[in-house]
Image (cartoon, rainbow, N blue to C red; front, side, top):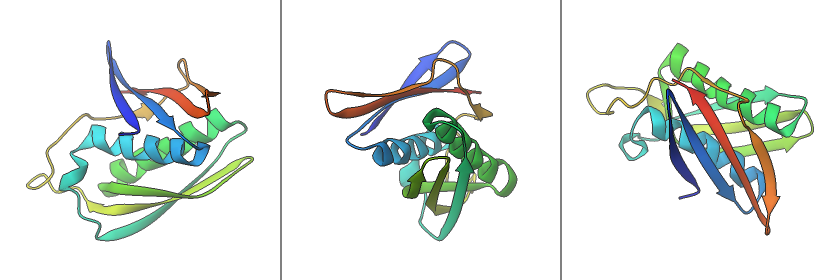
Length: 137
């Protein structure tokens, strides 16, 4: 697993590790949906493209995660798998594979409100990309 759930008083977070920055972003997206429901219960029935803009790598990550939260809040879309298609200066784009949330098949997890900048730091250590991102719940 490229992410670990962090229990933070009043919030929740993800500790991320990946060999590439792209992999870190993918792990963050998949980790987000694991907070909402069990990913193994999600079928890959539909692909949804999400994109975001930001002035920094941290800004891009927060914006992309918040776009995924928007997809869930607005359309009930949950993803089992994410694939980052573009990560450039100022822009990120990913494809999510999943389906609409079905309370009969998908156990309800946390109600994630937003990804935050609180203590967010993306760094490369000993050849691995690492980050911790905190979500408002």
